[in-house]
Length: 232
Image (cartoon, one colour):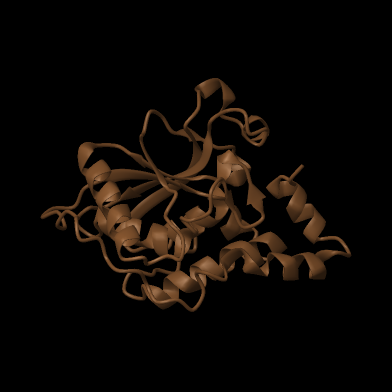
């Protein structure tokens, strides 16, 4: 049975830490040192006035996905949580049983006058995760770690579907994209200890291996959109 992420984090603090870190190094090898993927051909223009819109993405461990999006210029707030299942099963202990239908997700609230939905998708596919891995990301295995775009409206659905088709047609990735595009029914906030976990635990071996490279890739590939997030 695969380790839960918290079990893995404890294991990595043990005497086996060095060996485990080496074995997990492939977790983000695809994001580091890579050029950014092409922008979305189908996108909306920047809004004329500041506002607030919401996007929800799932791409493996929500610690890492949040650590990327909270450092994107134009993003106003991020929250980790669960989407795809019911309110009664939206707890970490239940989600890790892989029986709830939930995916670990991140709610991204952004200013559409500063960044577009297509730009958020570009970051999601470029550095936040590997969209060709089915029901896993790196060492995390199971449907709760699947790649999903939970769209909130028809524009988001149209842009997401068109972008996936564009990237697949251009063979940007060595394998087909497996990201699901599904309507957002509900987003349930995760437990407090999961919020900004990577920010509050920067020396955790799991964060160093699986999440820190995503932040570095964001800074390298999207310097104009990178902000050095320090928390609230």
